[in-house]
Length: 258
Image (cartoon, rainbow, N blue to C red; front, top):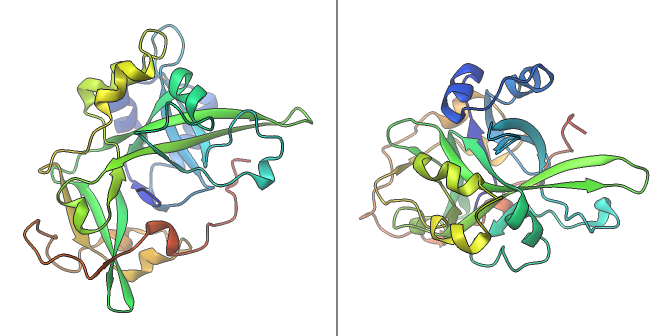
């Protein structure tokens, strides 16, 4: 699954990579998201959607999707991940899968491996240092008082060989050549893009042991992703016990976006 991730790409590089239009109302706020080392549920995240007239658009949403039919957002469970295998059929995600698919830029993400009584965090990133795009969904919740909350979730799929050593799930990482297809909600229904929701290639990622400071969402600095040892190898001994990335800390207070 994906309960914490990192985004350390510059704003200009983000625009060049994802091809979204310049928006003075959002770019300054997106700049605040371009140097984050421990993004957690309920905090703002950057997403890229198809926008209007075929021009991609970047914006901020709260990480934790609230279905549009929810009566009270305060009592809604925190839906920060959606299972790719069932999202098109689940009431909570069905409409977003049909109409509001998006990309979630990320430099890497964390997963935890239990070692005795300790939980060792691993930073998982592309071997070539590139920025990834998770498959995401977005939804806007309208409150009874007319307020709006833009929210989002990250799709997960079964783990590849590397990730299976840490967890049985991983975020869906979309190949850049598939971004247009995923974002094309006008012409492609969920069944048409289901083939994109697959585990990442076994050679794409590396898993690096990092500081246990990553366990706390209060820590958000470059030292969190500094390697403590060599990356995990697929032929290493299996983990003693797989740890759930959502169990490492309580979610932080809701971000300043709302």
